[in-house]
Amino acid sequence: MKMNKKTKPNYRLEQLDDIDVSEDPVRPELDLKFRTSYGRKIYGLKDEEGEVVAIICFAFTHDVPTTVQELEDFSKDAKLQAVHRAGVQGDIAIAYTVWARKRGGGRAIVNEVYKMVKQSSNLNRLVTLSPLTNMARNFHLKNGAKELQVNETSQNFEYDIELEQWEKIKERMKKVKDKLWFAKG
Ligand SMILES: CC(C)(COP(=O)(O)OP(=O)(O)OC[C@H]1O[C@@H](n2cnc3c(N)ncnc32)[C@H](O)[C@@H]1OP(=O)(O)O)[C@@H](O)C(=O)NCCC(=O)NCCS
Image 1: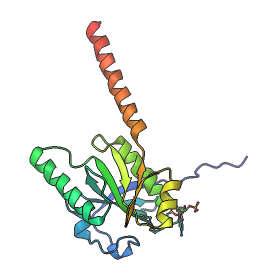
Image 2: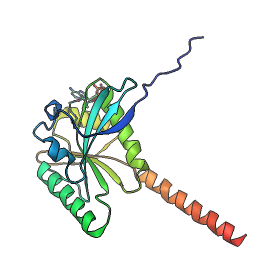
Image 3: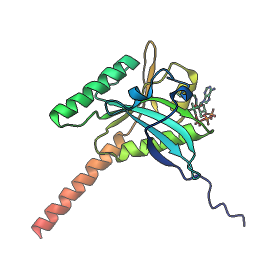
Image 4: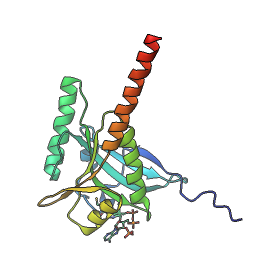
């Protein structure tokens, strides 16, 4: 019998501080400072050899941006509000660019990011700020995202994590129930 031990490569998501922004096919005009200021983050997906196969950039906001200017303003506001009020920096993760260095890397990084957002306790939504291209549209819809809105110069897709929120609430309720049970007994 033919053994098929490993079908999927072993990927891991890593935060990156330094990338060549001119490599970004979507928004090469955004410099490294933009991508790392006000809580914004760059993630790379590394394969077993440590090679970065895809890159995705995030900003964290409380509202869905429809332009890069809004992305900049909303994430700046969210960061400053969090500093002043010791609160959460922005509960919506906005993926404003993603590109693959190896075929399949794009899909794989979105899968890993989805898991990361699901597991996070302070992020509630995963939304994109995508260019008005068929490539972006096909890519996100094929990966299971829903169209949120089509704007004048961009489109937003959303990867639904609502179910996981319910699962979290269910977990919390279960813990409360267990506590009550112990208190009673
Ligand atoms: C989009 C991208 C990230 C996909 O990466 P990937 O998952 O590693 O690549 P794949 O080539 O397997 O494509 C996955 C899906 O994306 C879509 N896609 C890829 N290239 C496309 C193109 N030239 N035109 C239309 N759709 C395309 C398709 O739905 C494709 O699925 P299919 O191959 O089953 O038809 C990659 O093509 C890329 O880096 N593109 C340039 C940057 C970009 O446009 N990013 C997306 C918007 S932010």
